[in-house]
Image (cartoon, rainbow, N blue to C red; front, side, top):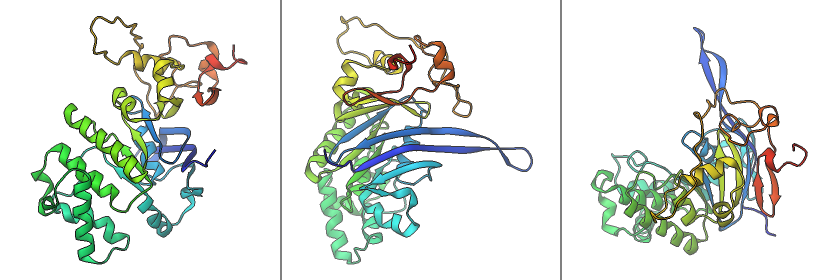
Amino acid sequence: MQKPILEVNGLKKYFDIKGGIFGRSVGSVKAVDDVSFTVQEGEILGIVGESGCGKSTTGKSILRLIEPTEGEVKFEDKDITQLSGEDMRKLRRNMQIIFQDPYASLNPRHTVEKIISEPLLIHGMTDAKERKDRVKELLEVVGLSGYHASRYPHQFSGGQRQRIGIARALANNPKLIICDEPVSALDVSVQSQILNLMEKLRDQFNLTYVFIAHDLSVVKHISDRVGVMYLGRMVELTEKDKLYDDPKHPYTKALLSAVPLPDPDIEKDRVILEGDVPSPSNPPTGCAFHTRCPLAMDICKEVRPQFEEIEDNHFVACHLYDETAQ
């Protein structure tokens, strides 16, 4: 089996909580708490979970847009958490991000040409004509016209702006793109266009995506494998068909039971979770989900379950599948 393009091992990101008159650290928000997974070249890995579960922080920590607290992130066998600023800058041409909000991620004072050509200039394309031709080519790749280059972001709709964001991410022919909820701010009809475009670009340029979203149907449409996060931890990871047909973790079952079905005659058992999501600044002991889990056992309150392979390529962090815990 080929080596994965991306390996994440024990990734943690804690944000300090400051308090008192001296602004001392009085605690920490455990936004990402020991997450591990791999991504193969050409694969689309979906990451889903409720708001505040740490999906976006995971994506930004992989790229070191936010510095991880602990853990290693290996891209093509290089541990990028150990790289200097200059080496990281060189590597960034191979690792790009598409941001969630196409209204906030584009500079309103710059033309589309300047927005897309900036990464080209940073990574060494000094010839102005060459950059101009590349911008025109990229705009056409994402379904816009070359003459759009002289316009400003406010002259475009949300879907068109996201296409500009995708063109910027593609500028330097990256190998890996982190997609941070790239369609959540868009209308449903535009969502499908952007998703289809991203699938087409993956095949065309042999891209690898980590696709972060909270919409399970969007993730099902585009992903090869899906990881489910809860309160900063990965609770389940497997191929998408396996996950949707036979979810193992009680949280995954509850999430999937909330997805509406297009046929009103099909009756569905809805799993209603009790209580609210605990605070990441004070997560529960043991399994983070035990406060809301309908199947919680005594061991769940005390011992944190290991994220282990319980079937072929099916990883779950749950004591229900741990024979020593029964």
